Length: 211
Image (cartoon, rainbow, N blue to C red; front, top):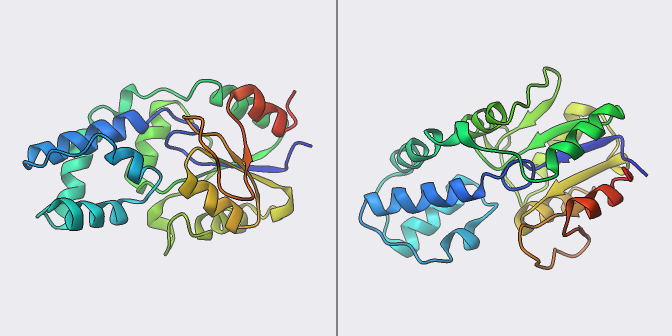
């Protein structure tokens, strides 16, 4: 059955932005003389900026303070953000849900600056759509607060809601919020307990009752 509300994670789920996040992370680290391991992005995907910074500081010796680090990384990221594209199959799902009157929101662990840049890049301009960034909550994913905030803002019962996520961190947040959580990873990996796993847009559509 199609839910009354769908809350989308942004990076990697609705928008194919994870490669740019990785490129920006690597470029920013190299600019301060740190060579990151090849699997660094995979280790931090889905996490908010502060915990990622703490990993870089504690494990790799990043000497910048948080504000200087974020300014450096976003300088790399925002210059390329206008070239971002939706994830394959995601925008079609988004539009079909909209046509059925489903309430949709963006729930991201990214800062507001990144959320706005990414949505503008892919042409998502919905005047009444709620967007929740890491700046809007006390605790980011995997805490359920961002998704519970979306539920509060939209006024849709949790039982009538679906969450769309591509990271384990995000899917854990959806499950913890008590919402039906569809885990649609970029790679074929297992999802957290309680999540419904989809490995293609077709499988996502079936879980949302669109086909």
